[in-house]
Structures are given as structure tokens and as C-alpha cells.
Image (cartoon, rainbow, N blue to C red; front, side, top):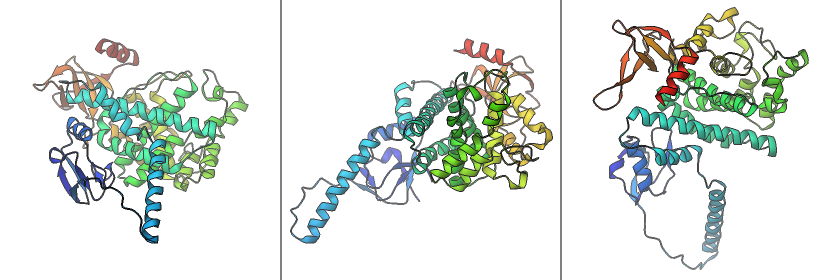
Length: 420
């Protein structure tokens, strides 16, 4: 793999093979010219090098097409014309670019000058999250209205998202859940936030990247069977009737059948089918025990439970991420795979990334990263204090700094209101 300095590239630069941000994030296809806008975006976000297995060259001057003089050259001309038409059709179909490209364009429009790197990262993750939320809504809508569900297309879009989570984990985990008071908001945010937690778990388990992407597909679509049920069954502020509860129990099977009918990989199908199974055999729909439940399903089960506990719903009181982590660690009745819970703990810490805490010195901090050696001692950002570069002061919890307690939900809302 060859490395290239971004500052040395120009709009005439082309590469004989794919240009990558890292080993997986595709920037340009072969022979596609580099451009000033891409260069500026990379520099703005402090990416100084890119890589490619190919060589660097320059775009050649355009040549006039030569007249066809033989059967072979006529065939070549026809093939060239067909390829040009195909490219135009693909361009029209994908005229808005990938989800990540749209997000980065939005970032450039709103990015503020002379602000801290931390703030710019949070602007980035918020916009990327919103764009993928819109994308998932589009996937659900096209399935509902046109019966379209394309594994390859979804896989390609979520590949970028998995790379983004890998790179921006400590920032994207700080995003706070929004009120989810209707069926659209509930399903979309549940799918998106669960996917973020699932990939965080997968990273801790050292899952290979291709499997991470399929896990993301499974997590985004694991509740798609809900679209075949009346919304009042899963968006309700009172106990379900026996009939409604039985209908709810069918949604994993509905999701499985949908994914099977559209030829999704078996691991994704099983992730959707088994995400409500429990280690102790008390889950549904097949009452499987631990050794028979797929790894995707075990991860989605923990990720979804953590998301559900921390997110606002009509039928329950939202709990803090700390309370959610404590509840999962108890693992009452051994419902969850303990290795998966441990992976979540080390991925987000006992005081999960994004949580606000009271400190022993009377100050308030926000958890911004984990301590890989001790999940009880996360990295804290002190609110209201900045270093010489204008960035918030960041310190590890230890003997000189201790957490007294987490802030209540109302305290967090009041704090966010005052900060805004």
C-alpha cells in the first residue's frame, strides 16, 4: 500500500487503483481525478495522508474520437458508447452521492471557523447520524411502498457508516437520544442507536470488519417485520392485550421471512430471527438456549436492551446510561451472553460515554472515552474549563478525581438547556 501526502495532490492527480482514506474507506475509484473540494475537506478534518495500491499519475488531455475502420474498432466504439450510457444512468440514479458524501457536504456548509476540534467532531457525528437516519427511513419507506430491499446497496452504505463508527467511536457514543413519541421516530432511532452500540461491541470483540458490516445490516433491519404490524402494538402507553402481545411475538419471524425472501445472508437472517432469544431459553420465538443462538443475535440483543433502557418511550421512564449498564451487568436470570455484556462494558465503560457526572470537587463532567485497563475509571471532560488551545479540559478518573454520582435525566435536560 502506497501513501500520498494530501498537500502534494492536485486536481490533475489520478490513481491507477482505488484511492483510500485507510485500508477500507474508499475515496475515489481508479482514474477518477482528485479535486480541490476533496482536498480541502481532508485537510479540514486533519487527514494528511491517503493511500492506494496503485500509482499516481496525471489526467491526460482529452482526445477526439477516431473513426472506426474495422469490425473490431466498430465493436469497441459500440461498447464505449454503451458504457457511457450506463455511466450516465448510474449517475442519474445516484446523483446525490453516498450517504457519507451528503453528510460531509453538509458539514462543510455548517462548520465554524476557530472552534475547538472537539466541537467540530460533534458537529460531524450529529450530521452523519442525521443523514443515516434519513437513509434508514428511505430504506423502510421503499420496502413498504415499493417492496424494494437491496442487500448490496444497503451493505455498501453501511460499510461507510461502520468505518465512521470505528474512527469516531468516542464522539458518536456521546450523542444523546431524542424523544421518540411516534412509530417512525421509535423504529428509526432504535435501529440507528442499536447499530452504534452493536458495532462498539463488535470492535471490542475484535470482529473482522466484513462481519461488522453485516452485523450493521442485521441491526438496522432486525425490526423490519414491525412494519407489518399495527403501530399501536409497539407504540402504546398501556399494557398490551394478550392478542396484541401474541402479535408482537411474531415480529422476529416476520423480519426473518422478509430478509430470507430478499436473499440476505443467513447470518443477517438469524440475527433478526433470534434477537429476542435469551441465554436461559426463556426468549422467543423458538426458546433457544445460549449455545444455539447466533453471535449476531446475542450482540443485537444486548445493544437493543441498552438502547431501550436509555431511550425515552411513551410506556416507561427513561433511565440513565449508567443505570442501564448496571441493570445489564446484573444479568438477572442469565438472559444475556456475559461475554457480550463485558464487551459493551469495556466499549462504553461503567459510566458510559456521553454520561454527565458530578465530581468530588463540585464540578460537572461528561464521559468522553473509556479507560481500556479499567471500565470503572473513564476519561472525563470538565465542563466550562478549556486548555490553552480552546479545547475542553480532559482528565482520567483516578485518585485525584472521583465521580460522586451521575446526573438525573432532568438535571441533564436543564444542563443542556443552559449550555445551548
